[in-house]
Image (cartoon, rainbow, N blue to C red; front, side, top):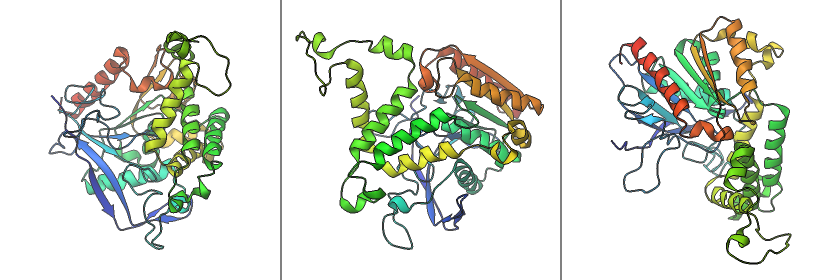
Length: 380
């Protein structure tokens, strides 16, 4: 059965107070829903997206080829998160470039495009905006909140900011904060964008240009960190493009010679055609800033003491961007608080991208967990 997706938009006139001290408003959130909310309003699941994803979690758009949602293998009729039983909500975060209010929109006070003047947003701000949306949808409590990578940080934050509104949290390929190496990768990517001559201090819209060179480099760098060494060697190795075409080997400094170079440049070109540079800066900063233990002197156990939800945490053995060790930190902290926690570390070769892929063990685990949630909720 094909799931047909339909984007929706909700307008909020009341300003949202942000952790940076500013307010954002009025604003809109773009979202999609799948399945039906039951009479008890107890079967809702919120999906939180990662860096370059959006509200389009699952299904396809009518008449559009290649429009599958970014987690379509996970969400839908008969899939691990079964929309025949659950009401699933995907929300595009503030600051994004896929419909919700962001840097590409007009500032209501100035009449100019926000650009670099868009306020800094955090994971906690996103969670609060999502809670407002759920209020409008009549959902007081979630059966579950779920996300991978940056989405997993949001799922964790939900259990701390609104502990009474979440029964289960699925935190996948994520961490309680970024280590210095991850922050460093993000900073290099931001510098690539900010030093592009077409960036114009974030106000490139006024000049009718896009800092594509910076975006390409940022995406190429990021993509390297999402893949494992094993996958990169298996897919590309040291293979030469020209050698495959039968041409003689040539020593160059600028041409694309290796297949991995061609792949990365293709990913960078594609990304620069659809993603917004200011959005990239905002979202990577939100990643950097997230650290619920900060206000507890770095004590993660104390930070997670507020959580009341049951947890499923999943990590992948070759994910060095969000390593299994970071998931185990969260598991230990939750167990110290006597939370109900299930944890799986899956031996998979795909690196960080594994949370998006079709690993049978992974999908079966998620399916089993949602089966238990449905049975507990009486809507199995």
